[in-house]
Length: 425
Length: 167
Image 1 (cartoon, rainbow over the protein chains, first blue to last red):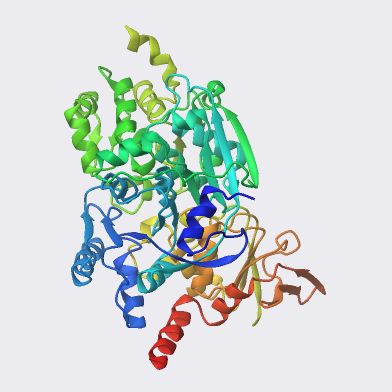
Image 2: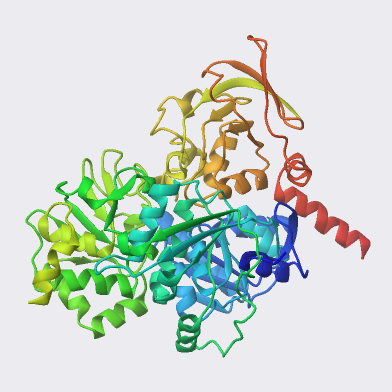
């Protein structure tokens, strides 16, 4: 019996030829990513208690993104501690206020196919877009990794999610994932490995693939992996990763999959998830006309360069509906600069958007900016749990950046395909 | 490892924002834990007693990797969580913090306030006043040992001490 891509990567990390689903193994970690919230402030006391140094100052990447900007005594202290810890431990890769970890780490060439990576954040499956096995862990577990370079893993089964056909205009990876969450539920991934494949996936850009892998978290998978191809190689070239052989990093033809789900991209229409779960996703027709006060383009899921482009293509030359606030928090400084160069930031500003820092922002709900009482928000983010982004009485609808932009203009949840004609004028 | 306490019953999909609200994530555990589960039961943090057992439906702990979700429960005195299923990261975090988490079909047969006994090693859950019991899935040995040693940190402490001694 052949092996799935997930098994192959885990086997390599365990120094074995084969691993068997269900067995507990100890794996060697190729890279550990931590951020300001779950990172230094939480692992430092544990490492001190253990009396050990970090296992490698080269294989740890630190990013500040949750408490950015620092806004009070507590958050200033957290960032001070983060910077001091990075220095004291001689950490070679530190990205301070450069954007959200899930975007900053790959855009700096830290991820490549076949790597076994842990991240101190639940959206760590994003790294699966690059053919890496990457998953999220909590702070104690991360401290264990930093101390030993090892982690226990129950070898997962693989669930295949296959998309075939061509996406229609204004339909995105975000719609694909909302649809999948609606169909399979937030525990549909069963904490196993999810592998995305099929002709639709092959034609997606890297950032769109990142959106798929990212929202494996909402699907309840441990990792959301995509076999590398020429598009992966081209991307890695642009971020300085040396030429790599990707031949081995695909599931064998005779590999066993726990489940296979086949979806038709050509049939997909814009999806919206009603409060308070991504699993509430259904066709946009069900929530069309719902009045919104806030439209949010943000987070690792929904404010990368490709997302900003989508939103801007709808907003160009348009004005916001009266009473609607449009907030845009580009996922990284690099993407914001690219957007500026392409004239996209100007489109947002002309439409009347407020531009927020390159951080997790309202999506994490950790900062000073949160949704007020009874606010209804349409958001390009991944997670709409009650109270996450603000008051318990606020409600968040999830949609693609196109849908968020169209809704900001209309003042109510709107189908972006209604803007196709205007665009073709 | 036997736990005896009062049951707190919750539904499906209790998420990490309900367990550890983001707004209080920069605060101390004493403050953060006082808001644990308040979105679904405002009395929980105030009235929970050391030794109590939390029972829930499916996909408990869904969402973030913040381990404060499990830590807050432990801080408040919860001695074990039994759910129909757990979200993966929460499950790992709980074990690494030494909080027993068992998969079992208990939520349909208990009410909040029931007195219950749980034998963590075997997974046997008993309602002491009702003469009723449910067998939860026992933990795999590796994970049970981790919990029994108090979680990952004490486990690693022992490992590093042994490595030092053998040198």
